[in-house]
Image 1 (cartoon, rainbow, N blue to C red):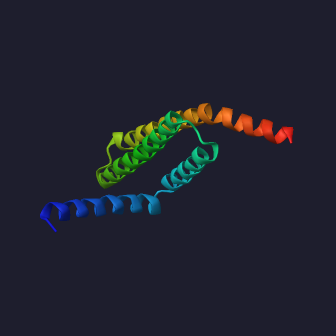
Image 2: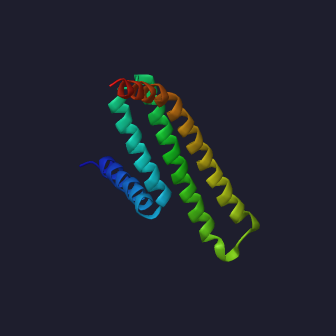
Image 3: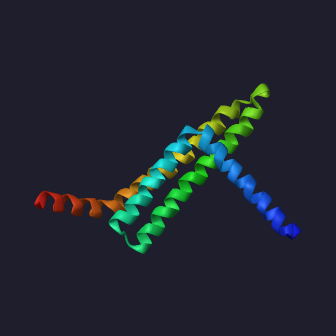
Amino acid sequence: MTNEIKKFIRSLKHAIDGLNYAASHERNFRIEIFVAALVLVFIFIFKVKSWEAIALILMIMWVLIAELINTVLERVVDILKPRIHPYAHLIKDLMAGAVLISSVVAIIVGIIIFYPYFKELVEILMGL
């Protein structure tokens, strides 16, 4: 195996370790993973259009990345805790706000996309 492939495999392992850390230590990340899996199931159940699936997958990715960045910044701020700076709390709040915005937008996009599918399902069930 070449040295470049070994470096790539090592980098991949570090990335997986980071995701495992987030999944085992961050409650919000676990919740977001659960919701992401639910959205993926709905994509297949409702056979959404390709562009809708792409939009939903991009929203999932955006929320998960925002949560990971939030976790990183929280850990960096925690390192500085002994010499707490007035901005330390503000930095955490701002990052949490960024995750909140990304989550709310993802929910809105999900509602816009899935509403017609759920409406049709309800109409079918009511017609039975």
